[in-house]
Length: 151
Image 1 (cartoon, one colour):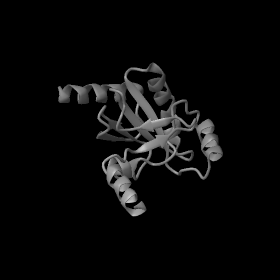
Image 2 (tube, helix red, strand yellow):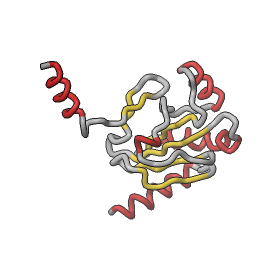
Image 3 (cartoon, one colour):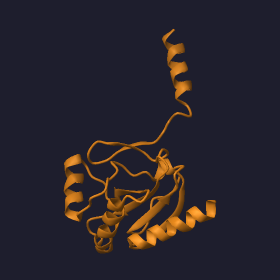
């Protein structure tokens, strides 16, 4: 009987495996449920000077709340929440940072250069990858063009 129940539970979970992430504050983030928003997922590292230069632009985009969510990913990862928090403070990041790399869950390859940003549509699909530092205006323009292409 237990084997049957286990098998039923496993079958029921197939297709329901949503990629669940958490930010540095423990908030649940589901990239396949962006509530109609677009997202910019940005890879950064403490040793990356162009990343440091880009962070204020991403902070501005995050604070502007123009239907775009900004999410960060520590390229080097962190061994603990304390270490991640230290990295975030050192970089001056004011937007949510994911607890793990979303590349596999999104079906894309991890970037090979930094900074790198993915633009994700409201359906949770990566629709563009941008390499190098981006400005708030450049990201908003790219999203506007992508929106226009889907209409």
